[in-house]
Image (cartoon, rainbow, N blue to C red):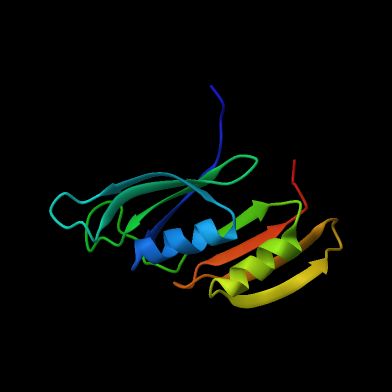
Amino acid sequence: MTIGLWQTIRCRDADAVIAWLTAIGFTEHAVYRDEKDESLIVHAELLWPGGGGVMLGSMRDSGEWKRDPGSAGTYLVTEDPDGVYAKALAAGAEGVQEPRDEDYGGRGAAVRDLEGNLWSFGSYAPV
């Protein structure tokens, strides 16, 4: 079994977040919609090149999986942080940190997505 780490987020507009994630380089793997309301996504999986990914769904008002949209933070390892930053801005993200060389090694940048989640990405791989 391969062990991996997956971020989970809740979204006000899950379709818009999926479109944004695919614009920056994720690949849509699975999307399951609510049978009673097709506008709601019960569960979706998007894969990041090189490993890992994101699982997401539409916001829920109650239950054990209730979380506020816009409260997640994720770091993505990429060989092209400048390119991912440019794609993120072009897809509507707000720039938080322009690409720069980091003191601890690698190059990185950060944005907030359409719902306020913080996404940082860089060439530094912690392992």
